[in-house]
Length: 174
Image (cartoon, rainbow, N blue to C red; front, top):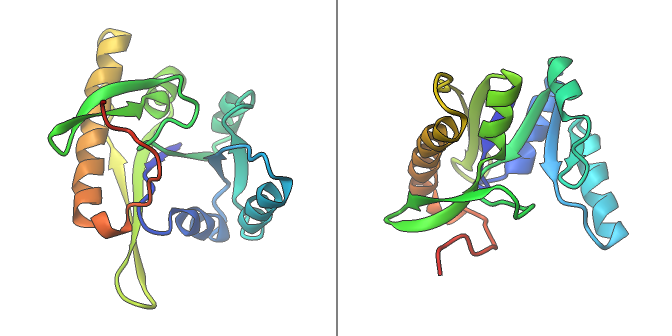
């Protein structure tokens, strides 16, 4: 299964919560230049059972899915810079990665969306919803159609919790 998420709320905690419930889950992440920072993130995730899948080393991704494990992929920024396409987002053109949708179409894995946000000082709300992939048609068209659906879901969620959207990268068309 593939989880599509965004950098809304404490998204790291969302993955850790699922791992703590016994779900075998991998979170995609960047390789960091500073090993102290790298080890901090790795150890924090692993302390709850969330494994890291580095975007520069995705060799085992199909094995992970075949073993019925979960991969969480933030889809509001393309960390690799290799699979982004333009989509209308909050009335402007923004660039989003298509990797999660392409992977689901290629592997046959189901998708769910997962977002988390703060309710009050001590509570969060985590929402997981099934995502119905369009699976019949030409590959590029399918990626485009499914990504348009993903972007609408992200726009709705981020728009409702804009104060918790933690994206420090420019995704907008220049």
